[in-house]
Length: 530
Ligand code: NG1
Ligand code: ZN
Image 1 (tube, rainbow, N blue to C red):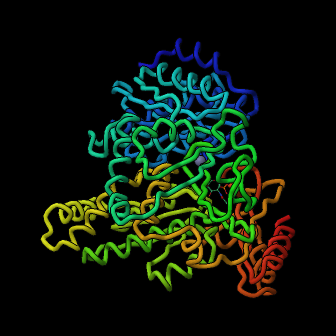
Image 2: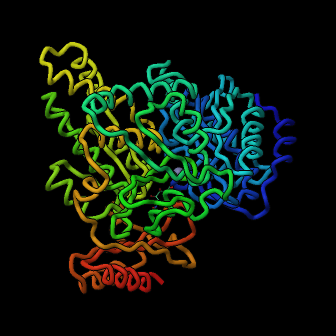
């Protein structure tokens, strides 16, 4: 039975500010940290309910990723490490927006609608990023779990993908790995070592990489991992959070949006560099050429590199495994062309949001998904994984068996629960080492079409409704016709608008034959949005 007195007492400790309504969006709840105490408390409650509904451990991650240090956020992690099931996003929104005195009723409603047995055990894993507000907010999560009689394990400071990994390990009885940080580091470093030892014996030079950690959790976790890390790859950590603010003028989002290097990392020509975001679930690479020009290697190019590598290996093992790439409308059109025409891998476009990409990628034996901003991973179907592990063990043909072994290590190295900057970085470093590629050669696979991403403030962004993986607007009436007419004025052009799921803005994206034209088209479309 629900502890009604306890609920009253604790909800009074984490009161909801009057009139505040928030929505569980593409990245959970995000807001100014001071506005989130009640949300955290209630998401602790919801996690306990979700755990009872699924009979599994549920994760709660306190982070606002790449957003400013003053912000915070929270998202729930489902049993296999995926994003919260969409049917529960609505419960999350209802619970977060309930007035304090309505809480008991809403909980009862959710239990009824979702067939939650209140007598069952509940188990929740908690993690948090390095924001000053995160500790206290995760305490509010704990209060929420406890008030509904749930058990919890607090992992404290972890990256978002590490928490996803823990939840998956816990619910698959260790099949995915051990649900500890040590288990995570061991799994990744073992797979990585096995992969690169081939390139090391072939006399490749030592690899060097400068990593901008956005002054966030990635720096702490890379430092922890150092003892497990092969000395053959030398990493240097920048923006470790000891001097500057989280995400301030640095990190993957800053580098992608501004197309320039982060503050606090000096690049020599042709040095390999990368940036994590604030919770280490995104990564982008970059370098400066000898003429001083900055070159960004974004999520689209990461997906391309991984696709080429995996396609070659799959051909070598000679199995008919279905591979595909999943992108969003923000993927640069040049990457889509290159993947389809040169790499010859099918490409699918889905709505923005990791859950959509992940879901689509699950349809294939090997599903590679990346957002242009650097969030992504590779999913292997259980059948594909079994086949590969079998071949790696028993195949008589040496070449086939070796290819299967490489694939097997890739399966272990990639964090299949969600995009993971640390894991993706190791995957990329391994591929570059094995293929003997420099960043310049990787970058030269294709040239991005000129593009521009803008945000527009409008009175109500929800008046824009979209279709066709967000590439066409169906409302307000007439908007799409206006966009079509503007797009026609330019060569090699496309443009679309959609309401952001994480900010109160409408995003406008345009591509065209030149940077000037992409800028002009984006600007003209943004005027049409008013
Ligand atoms: P919104 O604000 O819905 O555009 C942004 C990113 C997404 C995704 C989410 C979650 C762009 C254009 N959009 O979503 O790709 O990463 O944040 O963090 O980069
Ligand atoms: Zn992030």
